[in-house]
Image (cartoon, rainbow, N blue to C red; front, side, top):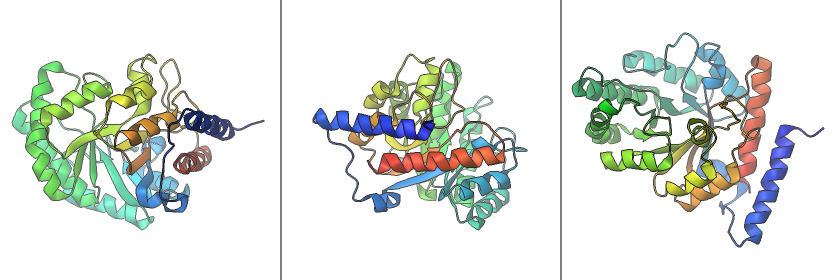
Length: 300
């Protein structure tokens, strides 16, 4: 019986052939063995969020990833690093990552502007400080669903772009529902802030998810030219499922990445966000399979 990885690899090879026959060039990386110099392939802690952070980091390292993204973990309400996390704690978390031979590539966090714009500015500033403390070059934001707070939220981002750049932290937003559910909506948010240090972290699984399967990320990914600096490697199955191993769902990663590369995303982080649920042994299998899957894509 063919495994999901084998089936996906066959679909990938067929898609590459179709692109070649149609006269469209496939990706031209310098060489497969140097792919790691161009793309930073990592994994978020989210698949292990039923366990505490050290277990998640162990799993990421065991699967052969070089980069870890800090998102969620047991005992860390909301996110591993928040606006109220102390810089000492953020620094300690960064050391835990390094102990396993990993580098922190991204931190998922968010901030509140419910009380005031100033609250948002200070909260985001704290998140930036914590990213610097733990060694993350990226802060991934989820956007805001409350339209009344939309101007206040993005004003807080605009006020912090220079500060983040000085700290060596890139600010990014992902497709995440509400008014940032699609590529064009994310473009509007990014253009509103109008700063080179605020860009898009693409998420093809979320494009499907928040459109309830109606919007294909292959189509959406052609709308984000010049914006993308990183990507969550996330898949989707109807009706509303993203907790699965990339390559097992509906996302055509070859075509999505082809569009993103054509739009200027020629290097950067590719960070796995979700895997099929299971115990630690199952997660280890899925994580290793997904790392190989991404490497297959990069060697096309």
